[in-house]
Image: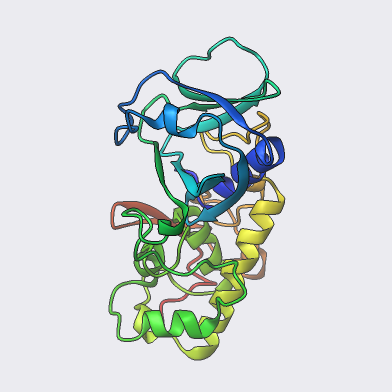
Length: 279
């Protein structure tokens, strides 16, 4: 599933193409995605101007004139294609057409994505965004934020970081990468981390996300950027998906056997047993 950098990359591509334009027409080919698209969605959106974009966690918020916001989630296989070709692609469930002929199509073979419409002033109280944690790339995010969230938690740090109520937008890939950079074992109890470790982790989370966004995100199976190009941050992964392969620290430890893989809460976790000691 696309994580924060991938969603941010898609949102920026949509923003460049669509902001300031009027959505002249909306074609909904099927309403039964993860949740049903409102029956009057096309009627309510057509004729409105796109005035801004915002990302909240892994959701893209498209703000329209008239105090309306489209809420979009890519799901596991969803992607956005921006073009001016009138021919429909396979699994193209919804298409936005602007006054100058641009097409913004949502393609989702597995139909785990979703699209909804809410009043802009009610974004934060929307059922899928309500209670979501702080954004890790906002100026207000700090080690104090994480220290408060980790207090007295006996669950593993990996599991806690994946909780969207703790940090919005973090997913399996970037949690693995951030923990590696901070030198923290993924099975370490969140509440046992020291202040200095939390400071290192905060910086690592922000650094890995910023680097991934700059690289256009990571391409996993169905994910591509809106213009069709592949993101390439996966080439910079230090531990994720590298079971048995050396991490950047391995040359310092000749006896190291490489990255190890375990399962936590049904998700694969990758880490270096030398750099990320549990104690």
